[in-house]
Image 1 (cartoon, rainbow, N blue to C red):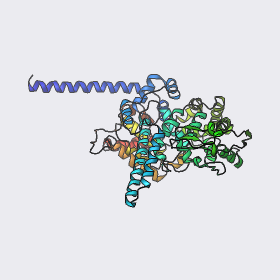
Image 2: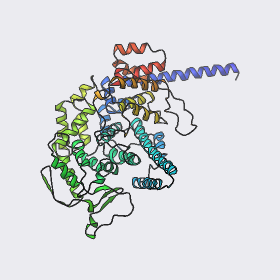
Image 3: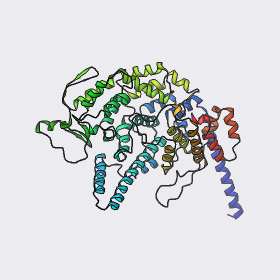
Length: 514
């Protein structure tokens, strides 16, 4: 073939490929166009952000089937590129007991170094190793949020972590904070509330964070007992008294953490009462075996069984149903959710014995929820803002480095595992829509909209940045999103001087902030 013929063939091939791409784009746009603005708003509300692939899936299966998939997810697999990143992380398959025990040993070794300078260096290595584990845990959270097919479960995992909040920088919590999310939160995020509450109670991270590891007969520590009632179950002003807090603290005596391989020394008559499950321990020598009166119920002193009885009482209390329902409605519907909706959710909670998926089904099928999809939606908190921007910009193209995202969340004051007090981050719009927050969001919008922002540069030394460019102005935008924008926003977008500038303006728009 001549050079001219070769060039002609290449030109024809290029034209053909361009035509095929245009037809595919038109076909995708036609499919996406069948979604209503409310459908797209539903996707945005119940996931970590609408993108082209999630919109296409919703169109293919229909709204109700999609809702059922999300409310009752099967054991769906993460995309292979995500799975391989997680599998490459150290300790991902080790038992938390073994991980924490190894770190405890490292800490003791560092503290026993005689030379002060060498001891300081060894302690810094220990702290750095804990920081690395926390960064890997945050990376797993981000990868799940961006790419897991069971998006509602991932939204609920963040909600419940925030509800049962722990702070990574207390003690050695950094070592096990990822395990806390992976084993105590995510598996129960759409299950029974009683199982979720028990899973958090049995995890060493919670027992360390709220000091129940220090709670013993004759040396009561009421921190965890108070927060279980005030934050985790019944809520403030729900009728419990200081006497109830003291009674629950007595019930929880002996519930703690033990990273030693050998069992504690016990009197023969108490040995059958010892319970050890990984790092969780119920030590009968530290338990108050006296009888208690808790929320009007008489509880006989008999060991760990008292804890189960107390959890049953708390989970069946009407105040718990109301408190949990109001928190969920505030997160997904409005800062001040309608009382009638909260009441119906609470009724479902009580009728189904705390079935979280059933409560969420009541929420997503409620007319009050549907009304918010037509306008007046909640202002995005920082985590939802950042995740939704990355999902829209890159769809299913898997990021190779989550550190930029971790940094953005820290700058926006909603860093993962970073809220110091047990109340968790605020779910109210007013906490996140101030001028300082907006300026930071504009900077992050520019970082995401202008290029790969380091998201596709692996974190290992001397790695090269993989080619990637955010595609925000896509078929989904033209078919659905554009119709929801105000004239002011459209006029601002028309002033963009480059694709990067357009991306930044769109990600900074009021509509994208909601």
